[in-house]
Amino acid sequence: MQPFLPSTFFCLAAGLSFMNYLAVAEIVTCSGLVPMRYRNDKIAITDFGGIGDGMTLNTKAFQEAIYRIEHLKRRGGTLLYIPPGVYLTESFNLTSHMTLYLAKYAVIKATKDTRHWPLIAPLPSYGRGRERPGGRYMSFIHGDGLHDVVITGENGTIDGQGDVWWNMWRQRTLQFTRPNLIEFMNSRSIIISNVIFKNSPFWNIHPVYCSNVVIRYVTILAPSDSPNTDGIDPDSSSHVCIEDSFISAGDDLVAVKSGWDEYGIAYGRPSHDITIRRITGSSPFAGIAVGSETSGGVENVLAENINLYNMGVGIHLKTNIGRGGVIQNITISDVYMENARQGIKIAGDVGDHPDGNFNPNALPVVKEVTIKNVWGEKVLQPGLIHGLKDAPFTGICLSNINLPGAIRPRNSPWQCSDVSGAAVQVSPWPCSELTSNHQTGACSRSF
Ligand SMILES: *[C@@H]1O[C@H](CO)[C@@H](O)[C@H](O)[C@H]1NC(C)=O
Ligand SMILES: *[C@@H]1O[C@H](CO)[C@@H](O)[C@H](O)[C@H]1NC(C)=O
Ligand SMILES: *[C@@H]1O[C@H](CO)[C@@H](O)[C@H](O)[C@H]1NC(C)=O
Image (cartoon, rainbow, N blue to C red; front, side):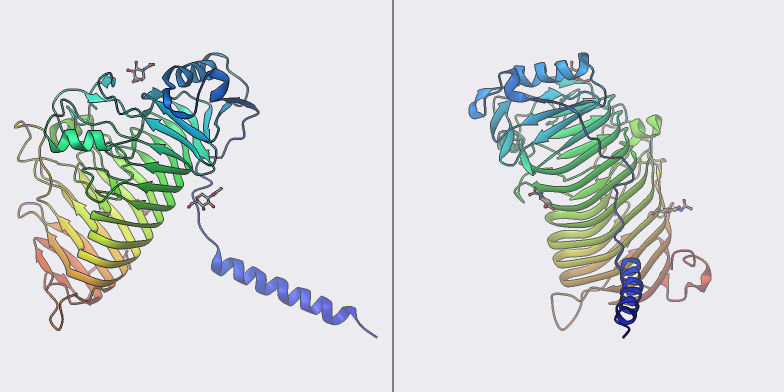
């Protein structure tokens, strides 16, 4: 009688194969970058007179609750609970050591009355508002100089009611640049997770001059015709990790930026060490973008496992003369796109200038860009790479890319100029500027 032998054997075998399974299926996440904080001290917006009836203006309640967190400092910070209900408010500032927690069915809703919307200074790296000269409207939810801030909950909603702003843009009655839905400036250790962002007036989530920012499990929704409603724009920021999110918006889903022409060059703050993974979305513009404002430089970007549907351009690296800035060590891999105008675009003639003072000799540098494992269906044009005559793009490496055209039987061809690098297993075949042989060294590191 040896009943234990088989079961011991079974456990051992199962244990081994389970470990193998873990090794194979291990999912890399952002969770180590910024630790999630548990807050002992909890307050609710309703303790400060907040009324979630969708009509009462709760600006004072938000200000007082956050004033209380800022001045009555509790060990480990404070959680501000937003119960189910619709809390209308004007824009407000967050503070350090806080968690803004939205319950299921909690909505923080921006007022449509834009007359008293606060103005703040332009970003030094932009020199002016992005769309209008001068200052810019403060983001709906704003944080400047903060650390240890969490925005999370049970997928409650932050609603920008952007249509009033989109209409001002359409009617050309905007006085200043529209507000972002959420902006963190000069901040670090930020987590944004399990929140739905809806109808942003302008860009949705804008970390600028920040480090250690995690954005995960978010849903970002804006109509496809809403102007400039970018999903997430890490800007002159480092160690930003964006993952497991759904974004359907009117402009680029994720665009890594770093300032605008002479202002961005003078400010000189790059974006670097940016991870973007497991993003699904849809947009008439780009899925994964770098640019076009890249004057401080963009380095060490990894984007992987991206699924794009009904797109303008799947992958878009964009810059311009006058931008300056070095875009390098960009890796984009495992991208599926369905129904896109263009698969891949890397171009040096995209975007406008802040004013006439940009330096036409400030040429951008684009090098060491690897794009691999890209599959597409119904992609009208597979790709375009246009470097600059006086600053060709180098080390552009494409591998295992299959972007069959929507128009059969003939695929429209790739277009290339002023570029060098390599292409391996790319269909349709890109262009003679890219060698099929990567022994040249141009791409050896990347494959
Ligand atoms: C919010 O922050 C902005 C930018 O830091 C500042 O200009 C403004 O005065 C703050 N508003 C309030 C009500 O504290
Ligand atoms: C919230 O949404 C995320 C992302 O879609 C999802 O993974 C999570 O399960 C949802 N959580 C709740 C509490 O509904
Ligand atoms: C390039 O970027 C990756 C992140 O995608 C990073 O791990 C790597 O260290 C970078 N390489 C260099 C030479 O900086």
